Length: 279
Image (cartoon, rainbow, N blue to C red; front, side, top):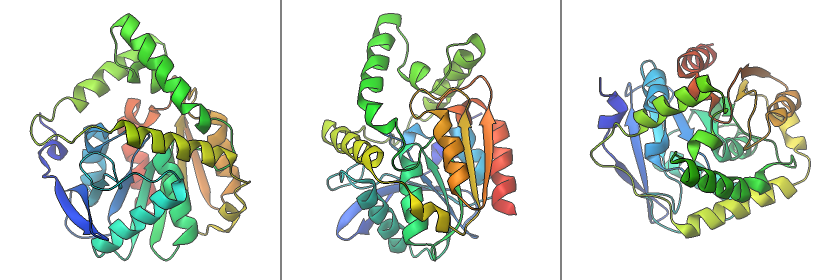
């Protein structure tokens, strides 16, 4: 059965004179959940099982930030600038209150937004991400290259190695996830450019070199932190640290899974996300 999100029309909105590509799924009313994506990702990299699961109850908005996929402009090389673009995008849509779901690099962007614009944010979900100053983000380029090499040698997709554990169960989940990503056949997004990848790598390195995120202690919004138990992209221990730094955080760690734990356990994640966002 074709996922509803796979039929969502790609729209654009002008953000300071630059077109940002986005899609909307789910109810037209209520506080929207803005999805912020990972390093190298475009609109089509969101798992339809997650998008449609959340959109069954909530308005979901997916966006390519500046320079990414179908959006215009040049990708900035800092998480803070990306967060500024995300806020400008939400304001261009006339949104006054949002929930955020930030995955990986998107989770870093979400952390900046909730600290700098708490008036805009109601609740936050941070998946497979890390606080500023934690080790891991700067290695993203080397990890990606190793996965590309391994994938080429084994005839697999790099996400088999980047997002999932090597066990048979997790690799089967990877196959299912990749099949879901391929379901959309019309109006697919453009891929990321080498320039965008370079800018995002620089942003990740700057994030790791950042100072201890003392501002997280002042975040007065409820936060759900989730990850797999063996994240090779951004070490799972960073999710524990993130939950400890936030005053009002819940932590959920999925077994036998990696960076893409929310995709491997999409039914469980959607249930937890909707429960958390509904409270």
